[in-house]
Amino acid sequence: MYNRGGNRWQKRLTKFRSIQLPLLITVMALMFVIAILGIDKKKPTSQSAVTNQKRSNLDGSRVQFDPTVEFLNNTEVIWKIPNSPKSVLFLAHGCNGRASNFWDKSPNCNHCVGLPEERLIVLEALARKFAVLTVSSKGKCWSLMKEPLVVKRIIKWWVEKQNLENLPLVALGASSGGYFVSMLATKMKFSSIALMIAEGVYDRIDITNHYPPTIFVHMPKDNARKKMIEVNLEVLRREGVDVAEIECMELPLTSSFLADRVPGLDLKISVELFDLFKEKGFVNKDGYLINDGRVIPWKEAMSKSKIRLPNEPLVNYIQEELNLAFAYHEMTSLKSEQIFDWFEAHLR
Ligand SMILES: *[C@@H]1O[C@H](CO)[C@@H](O)[C@H](O)[C@H]1NC(C)=O
Image (cartoon, rainbow, N blue to C red; front, side, top):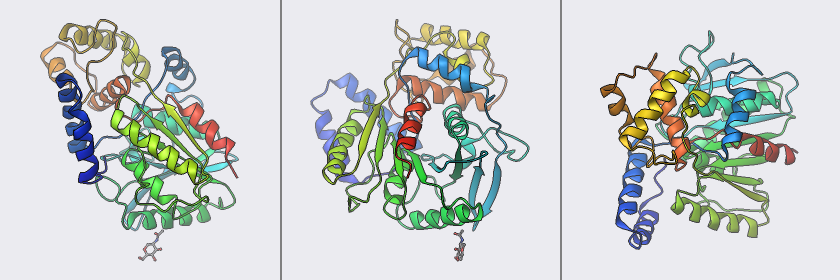
């Protein structure tokens, strides 16, 4: 997550004083973890949406992951162009993210990670004929100083090299990537942008009516951020910018939730983990997580149990899905359909 400076935090702290102590402690612990680890992700709506998404998309049967990996002036760029693309999508990860998180491991990209939510966003994009361009930030998080111009140059260079300069350009950034995209949109023309779990850096931007249509995809459980997004929606609207908002609510875990959403995790382990979470009180009686996946000691509980994961990356996949279910701060693919509808409605 990008550090917005002292003022905001102080204001938040003042607000928190009026909230009950246990909630305050939970939220502070989570904010601390997010600030330290730098987290970026997102979240969904209904259980049926989760299942539908899985059926159509989870196994990657609609499109193949065989992206091209390149290094431009030491910046990693991973991309894929579907047949007859109608638009170019630039994707910006969050803090600690990489371009390789968006793509499944393949012969072309042996270091690719394929995080569950990231890969589904890419699959949706490719299925809907968006050329997908992912770039890794130089540091842990995106910088708002020189990096917008560096990335602008990379996008322009790539678009021209691929002969895609006549296609409309859109961008989606999550968390630090959302701040970055909100800034990048003042340096180059996008037909629309999506900011995920990020309020944008509109206190540093001179907004004109040329600013692209902007959709905020956020998790209202993060109430401080929700309030900042409400303000920014109004600020943009007043300048004549087309804006919209999608809220992502928490989801209950079920015995099959992790198997449904984590590639390579079978139902047996999914059931065992769900039972363990119930036993340890990590979920309440309705299956809702009591805290973010980064906060509850589920990994420790798992290693003390007899549950063994078949491979190491699954730990990160599971954690992402727990964060998604808790719906405080995580990348989410569950609103992809609405996000791409929004992009498509504004292509020009
Ligand atoms: C790479 O660096 C050179 C020298 O700074 C610069 O002229 C060029 O535009 C850069 N290329 C891209 C794609 O950013």
